[in-house]
Length: 458
Image (tube, rainbow, N blue to C red; front, side):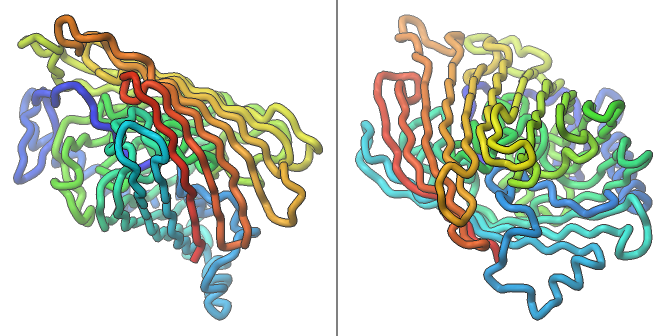
């Protein structure tokens, strides 16, 4: 989550859009009218519809917590009892720092050590507890991140860290949410990113490199928004059966989010809307609880999540070696996560598997397809603290439509990661790793990356 690979197609032409006072995108009739109406709708919903019966942080990817709230510790303790008192009133504070420290010990480029760091603060408020308004809550999060991206230096298609994107200190996302019918219908409105929950890997915190540690990288083909530069959005989530959910979101696209809205304090519209929809089957898990992230509590027993989704951008996109633009671009994806063996059905010790695949039209998109697969062993080591061992694989393909005449064909880039996650202290998590890449960037070279992730809970 957070990183976006540079993509090899031209920026979309202006087709239609919403409205921003200093950057108008004309709609078929009057773009300013549609934009103002959308802003008004968000304000109305935000005023009347704050979200769930129990406040639950929906952090994904590397920001997901490995341990549930009841098990993880905090470097600064319980604030003299204030943290526990606030939790009883429905107010949850979450502060943590993550650092990915990586070095290419073998590659075409000279050896280089890089570090990328993110500090995030999140507040979730259960308004049911705080002001006796059941079904209502509020979420807000901000991030400060900085460092160097080893993937750009090596020319990799699969980014070796799911943290890296822009260096920024910004309000990331906020939303109000309202739930009805025992959480079977939810409406969320505010400022948030599509890849927070659409196309995001189920076991994101168990891997370091981006395709398995966050969202599928090719979602950038449709300019689906990512965090921390989130944009205005509106989402509906429906649970028609205990183990099935359907959800859809409309997001305001921003092709230059880091420069257009540097603080994130004022929602802005800089492009046409992109829509993302997803349907899922959740055997062994309550579909109304899927906002809860993957952690040691949710892994108990034999559970799974099977998702199919699609992202669509109606703008005009240029086609390689052609002056005629093409209307619309889309991406489809399928993601599966399943526990496949448990030493004890009531516990989490055992083996989990994950698999994903995405595809978008190769006539428009350079990075048009990606396959990921992973295995995770929970509690393999006989030590008194939580630990996992994970092995992941990524296959990244590029479209031959972007090759110049007589240029050699691109090869499939293959990436493999092995890591061990160690919760050495309730507030400290270490994750040493090694990654191997073949056919770097679609060429003939290979690379080996060595490093570790460190995480501190404040």
